[in-house]
Image 1: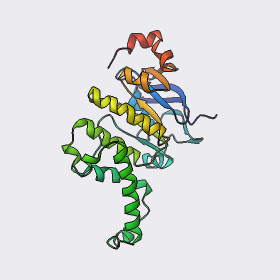
Image 2: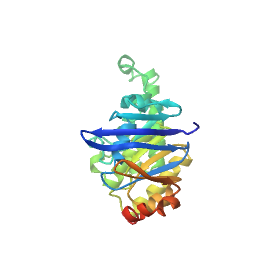
Image 3: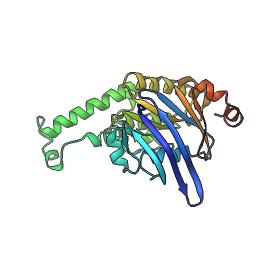
Image 4: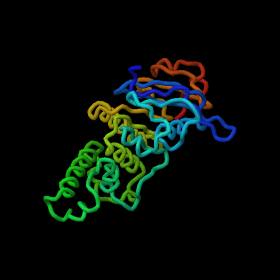
Length: 257
């Protein structure tokens, strides 16, 4: 199969509750693929299976021709998958720069003994530190976070905190970025800005995006394909126009914010 990312027959249960029920879908490289559904439909459980937080009961998750279901989160990150969370997972006493630098951890080569020599400007550790900072500065510029660079994240407005988490995920240099309700809690102006940043991430950085989103207008405007699920099952998959015209989607989701 030529698909960049595929989920086949994925099932995950919690006791007697089926959260994901034999789910199938496929995403093409370079696309923005959105997943919609009401609260409790299984969307975040799906992301947790993809990112290694949960182990599926059955089924396969394949990324760039490799099975990743059952791998630990750090191994999945090293394969090139990063994610944001519906509830922010930031270090609020650390600055924006420090939070983004933490996102570089899988790319760091210097061990503790080299780290002890970092005070020498020509040391291996110092050169690596400079390389990582350059990568992070590019993300700060991309997301217009210059004014927040040295500010503790806890002192930033919620919308800016969401951008910091997005930036930290980008710092991993992913090929596939999972966005869990990226516009939740944002103002209409912040959502409009987020739309353009996501498009920049797709087009300028070449990152494929798999997104859970409740704001239907954003889903319609930004997505290449959309998957609607309910009770962990697929209702319909197709273009935004095809999904929006589906009777079950009209009944359950259309018009929800």
